[in-house]
Amino acid sequence: MLGVTGSIAAYKAAAIASGLTQQGALVDVVMTREATEFVRPLTFEALTHRPVVSDVLALLPGWEIAHVAMAHDADIFVVAPATAHTIAKLALGLADDPVSATGLSTQAPGVLAPAMETGMWQHPATQAHIGTLRQRGWIIVAPESGRLASGAVGEGRMAAPERIVDVVKHVAARGGDFAGWKVAVTAGGTREAVDPVRFLSNRSSGKMGQAVAEAARDRGAEVVLISTVSLPRLEGVELLAVESADEMADAVLGALDRVDALVMSAAVADFKPAAKAGEKIKRRDGTPQLLLVPTVDVLSTAKARRAETGRPLIVGFAAETQNLLANAREKASRWEVDLVVANDVSLEGSGFGSDMNQVTILRSSGENLDLPLMPKIDVAHRLLDELVKLRRR
Ligand code: CTP
Image 1 (cartoon, protein in one colour):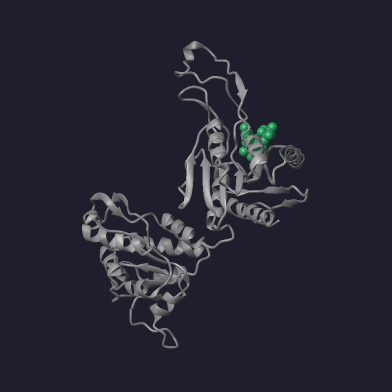
Image 2 (tube, protein in one colour):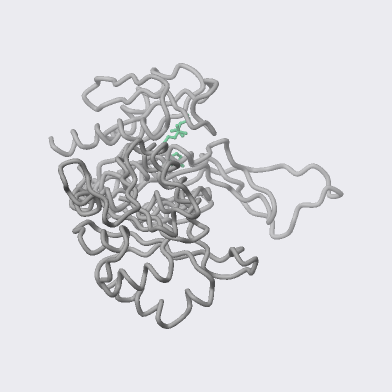
């Protein structure tokens, strides 16, 4: 259920309704009368293909009170935008409009995205009500600083719709098939410093690792994402920002003992400059010769540690530009990990930088799972399906 109240940010609630619907949710919208002054119910009906309730006295066919029946059905109740007035009503248990009445009748976990002027947000009354709601288990998506309706700049702008949708997905993940799992995921290409301004790197965008982290989070896992890239922050995912292969190795080995699965989608450099110049290398000093040395092999180090502790499950990624299967098979038998995801990074529209990927998953049984070109988030879910099967065994 999405409760919309009377703030100019109500127009952004349309993006939330649309985002949740696109993620497969059934979205029932309830609105205060003031909210309907900003956005018409028709907007939400068109987006969700479901009736909108904006009258606390509305009845459904069969004489059920609309907001009460919907509130009983709800899995999550999101109030976005939440005005200072609605926040006060929710905290006090007032129920004279469809949104506050839903707040009182539903058992569903609540998510609240406040939107108001800085002064109203910082007022002790509002902060006390927020404290009360937090104590009752409401998740507060803190407002951001930025331009407000008045033209002033300050704290109070409703969080971005994408962030609110991400919070809802995190809440919805409770009880998924990865509940109780801890998963570490590496993402992105490492950067190996040549001097203070230059580095050696590769074309990995980190999108595949980000997708695995998101998919695992959405299925209830506790996720630590060890990444070299700054992609949109995933709600509920612990982010460890790293740059070089050495830093990635430290982060992976630090997390290893507390995770059930390690998914190594990062493209870790195989070589790094033997030494990093202390100052920027000057052109006038002539063409430098770059001496490279091998980096730490994170996968092998993790595997060696696993030999002592017995955990976690490990997934390696094999990025190839030729003889995909033969090369990946050779790596699979050398690495002896649980799964290898083989990835032809020379294919157009797949792999590095793309939102799509075409992979083959090599199981240790020798049986391959050939997947067609699909969005990286779908590849991530197929990979997690394989991990679930492995753990059951
Ligand atoms: N990897 C790692 N440590 C490194 C390099 C790579 O742990 N120093 C991991 C990557 O995270 C990935 C896997 O090893 O999961 C495979 O990387 P890839 O470059 O495909 O394999 P290599 O064995 O380096 O083979 P190649 O000769 O093709 O580079």
